[in-house]
Amino acid sequence: MAMDMRMGALGALLLISLVHCFALSAAQDLPNCSFPAVYAFGDSLTDVGNGIGAFPEKFGNSEHNPYGVEFPMHPADRYTDGKLFIDFLAFGVRRRPIYPVLRGTNADFQYGTNFACSGAAARNVTYWSKDAGFYTPFSLDVQMKWRSRYQERLWFYEHLNGGLVQKLPFLNQTADSLYLVYAGYQDYFFSLYDSILTPRQALTIVPDVVQAISDHIEKLVTVQFFNPPPTDERVDLPIANNILVANLPPLGCIPAMLTQYQSATADYDSHGCLSELNKITSAHNELLGTTVVALREKYPEIKIYYGDIHGVYTDILKDPLSYNVTSPLKACCGVGGSYNFNKEVQCSYTGMVGNEFVNLTTAPCANRAAHLSWDGIHTSNTFNKAAATAFLTGKHITPEGGFNCSPDFKFWESRV
Ligand SMILES: *[C@@H]1O[C@H](CO)[C@@H](O)[C@H](O)[C@H]1NC(C)=O
Ligand SMILES: *[C@@H]1O[C@H](CO)[C@@H](O)[C@H](O)[C@H]1NC(C)=O
Ligand SMILES: *[C@@H]1O[C@H](CO)[C@@H](O)[C@H](O)[C@H]1NC(C)=O
Ligand SMILES: *[C@@H]1O[C@H](CO)[C@@H](O)[C@H](O)[C@H]1NC(C)=O
Ligand SMILES: *[C@@H]1O[C@H](CO)[C@@H](O)[C@H](O)[C@H]1NC(C)=O
Image (cartoon, rainbow, N blue to C red; front, top):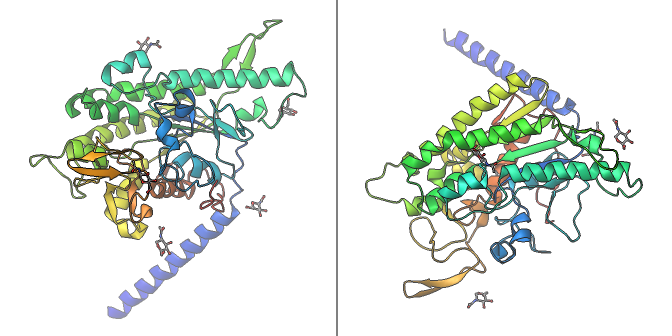
């Protein structure tokens, strides 16, 4: 009996190592990722400079220390300490970080363009602005119009101004490029942060937010056309064949939310997050997940990936030390309270907290890499890297295996 069990265990071990070898060699056989370009839509979790481009004062702090301390050579214009998820994703699929569509100087659009903007809701602005005090007019519908115009410009360059095209993808390459849609955080977060909606009310906007994301995806996979002068002939623009739809991190684990809704009577889950707020993101993610499944059925020839940002976040909360994270619920760049966040004096500003002068323009915390949240609102370089690493290695992503191409982590730590 004991012998049998040992044999069984040995057999299992052998099987495991066989499976492991097989998986490894399969991974080695994958072709290199080769999307011609990368495009992105969303809010401040994905904005690489459109916010500050359009509203230099409102988003001026994305250029102030210590934002972008991992980008010492130039202001990063990103709401994080280092790279955003989109930066890691673009590097990982063997491309360079993509530049904001509103960048007028020294941009490199060779490998795509980023349409995401801070303060951008998934729902259109007319619809959304009643739910928040803080927003910009560049919701997903506007970002889609920018994208169509971008494609029209490519057509003009190629057909009417031959030879003028320099360092841009060809229009036909926009078809097989990779498109990221990572939206909705703005819709929930700022409705709650500005106390326009209660958590219970925020739960009721889930269907509209997911519908807006779904509409966006459908526009990406439906042929748009235009009638360029002088002939006004109809020109069809390429659709997107590879779309990564990302879900949302758990709202109840975000330091700003934990601070604002902290109470002795609130329900906290085993990780110390606010259950009522987590219900909102869970409802969003669940509906988004079923929506993606339905879209895959409706458009079987399109690859629509679902990236489970929430799953990566929860994995880290379950075992933070394996990610070298020691402060999963505290902001790095912030001050005070249980979560190192204070609405009155935020990252990159100075001010008074009680009688104490606080200077948050440098040296935010002892170890940035130990935090999931950078400034109490936006995820950190550590989290963004973990999420991209997971998806690129086929974890927390569907369909099974993810992009099924060999990523490149060479530039993971590069400071560009
Ligand atoms: C994949 O890219 C690596 C560089 O990261 C290169 O050495 C290798 O030759 C490429 N493989 C193929 C099949 O192109
Ligand atoms: C905004 O979205 C709402 C709800 O989907 C829709 O009724 C309205 O027509 C949209 N407005 C604009 C300007 O697109
Ligand atoms: C894509 O467009 C470019 C420029 O018009 C052209 O040279 C190339 O052959 C096209 N590629 C395909 C696969 O059609
Ligand atoms: C955690 O830190 C150790 C020691 O510095 C390092 O070897 C390991 O790669 C780190 N793990 C992660 C997930 O960053
Ligand atoms: C905040 O700290 C930085 C770095 O020590 C310093 O340069 C800056 O003058 C300080 N700001 C204020 C208002 O004291």
